[in-house]
Length: 82
Figure 1 (cartoon, helix red, strand yellow):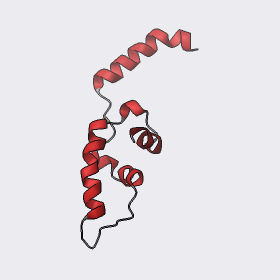
Figure 2 (cartoon, one colour):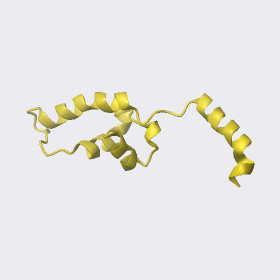
Figure 3 (cartoon, rainbow, N blue to C red):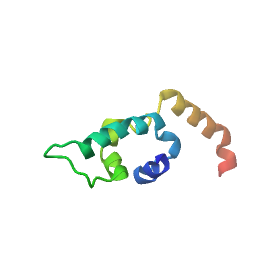
């Protein structure tokens, strides 16, 4: 499921939070099954998660230390990559 979300959001799978995906299943179930005027039993999981990915925080934030590590790695391996 996380891989499908990563593909739909065009993000690497490492940036998708497994915990938040499973946490969001509760909210998806409530959106789908509650007897409210806005409920929709035909809702699809992946499109719903993509639509609400920001409020569910499915994509992990890029931290400062990750940016520093990536920059340092690029400095080290830049000559090998060209």
